Length: 315
Ligand code: SER
Image 1 (spheres, helix red, strand yellow):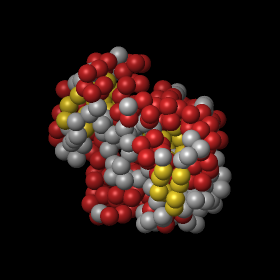
Image 2 (cartoon, helix red, strand yellow):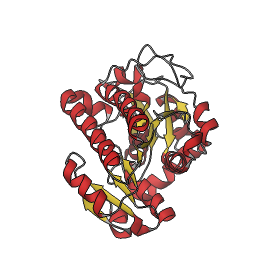
Image 3 (tube, protein in one colour):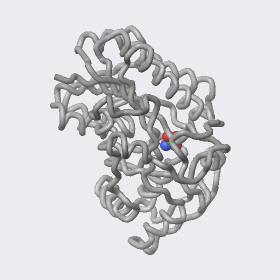
Image 4 (spheres, protein in one colour):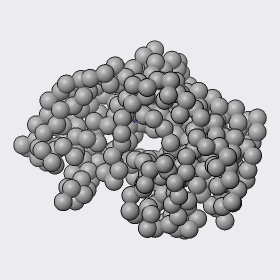
């Protein structure tokens, strides 16, 4: 029987992933952990414990004590925040990864998921339909840490037999837990501000196209990758994941179709340069072929769902 540890369960991805995993593997087999208190649903549906992934001994102790077989390590400082504290962000992101790689190596928790990101690409990468294998010269701390992490993951897989699996997430759009400090966060904030105030000031310029994905698609595909037959995985670094690409202007127009009074203005900040260094669209055919990656949310479905759910949440 699988016993699953989720690190970072109070965050944007973790808070939804834990609930999805509990449905599949049983509430008591999915251990949620974070350094912050979780949303109520997480605490009430199964085990939660405060745990700092940077504390190696505690982490190893936890994994051995609860006979963990799989780890999802979602702890990270996102791109925008990382640029404000470069060295600290590097230390946190890398130590969090290295601790889980080592714990996997030293324990029975051989299966390890760790998210990479479109941030592994940089200004010299082909910008449209970015291939799986291509030039990678990220120029943000976050991107450098993700690229290094992919290399370490593959290394631990080949050298020590850790069953490392990863995807390069595009911007993730969700309503349950808001992200914090990312460059793609505008695409979440815009819905909350549209419902609260009927207007939004975007920190990215109107024609900045970026790949994005609705959280449900991200979670379903993450679990699919973790359940895939290991022999079918031609890559042990991280798979490209495309989602859908759109600009702030296109997203605003889709909202205006449903809320004609909604107004958008643009005031790019330091995150514009980060967005400009990332791909506008991605080729994820390797993931489709290896383990059946599939996306269900196109722009209209995403906008309908977000407007409905955010309105419910803010009520
Ligand atoms: N969404 C993340 C960010 O903007 C990228 O992985 O930082």
